Length: 191
Image (tube, rainbow, N blue to C red; front, side, top):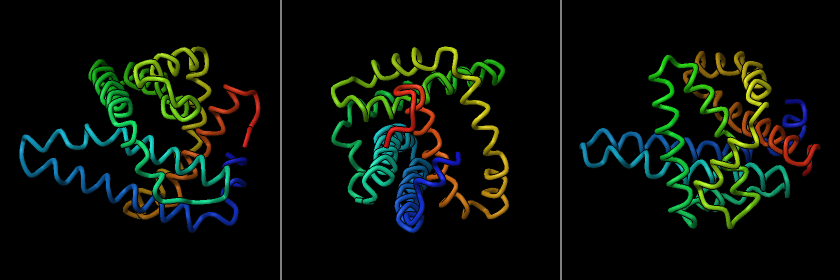
């Protein structure tokens, strides 16, 4: 968490702007789904590409100190792979949550590194990235869960501010997850 906070020094304005655009697009996709039954699939189709793009935005922002907003849409360049990964992850997590919540949390933790794996390996398919995430998280799910628990106060702040604090909390959390991924993959907080 400390490393993530340090990574954003001097970049919070750019991080907030990218997060605002990302969250607005997610809200619009969710609103479209309420118009008709046919359009209800829109959030499911775009959540993967948007999540991939947002992770890429954060990776590039902290890595190169340059927040190119076009990277938010990079997931659409790999639409089939990112869409498939997003749909499979959503369905598996939903099924797990229906089975007494804990299995859903375990599944979500196991598949949580998918976007970072896809960013590190542009040739990997979405399904293979999900498998690799599950393999990589074997024995580390509790570590990530404990990291997530440390964000409870921040998440409460998001709730108290009716979501406004999410503009800062979301990039902070993704930055911390990025550092967690790099620690697993490289054994260090590689920039």
